[in-house]
Image (cartoon, rainbow, N blue to C red; front, side, top):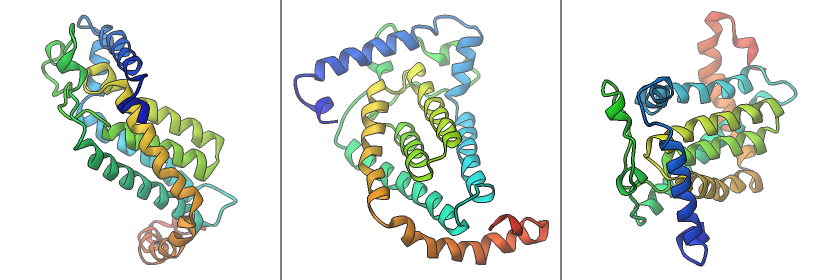
Length: 230
């Protein structure tokens, strides 16, 4: 992050940004299945869809993962959620002091998805593109699952979700690739070590037990799924 903000390699970061933008956005030069796909991927509907998809592995951990006490599993999911909130809060605080327009505002040629698919409300620009909430949340999510849960299948899913959440804005021109790599990855690497090097999971286990006993079990008891919370 320091090398991106100031120093001898800033120019290389900028050149990398431009090459990635022209390579990705440049592929959207006509109306067709490829362009329509990325237009849909940049809609609010898909944002909500991916939020649901991100929740599914967490539910699997709570209900199906074996070999780890239920309160510990819930505590680790809470820790990941806490890390996401903390990282986004830090990112917004820093982002307020970094004025950066999205590539769609400063580079040409730019293929605007709204011109190709006007029926969709596609986000293609931003006046505060760094660091990007999608990138921050996606990286924290991935690192949390990789380092806290240490499950190979979940690692693959987390990496897939990270890529799927960040690529659309790069194609659409709403963010630079460094918004994702430097911003998202940087803030994730600031927060995730706190989850690993402190007893935060242990601190959250009593809260997890309260959530299980007072909320989750009563909700699941009528449908016969209470026994899954073991």
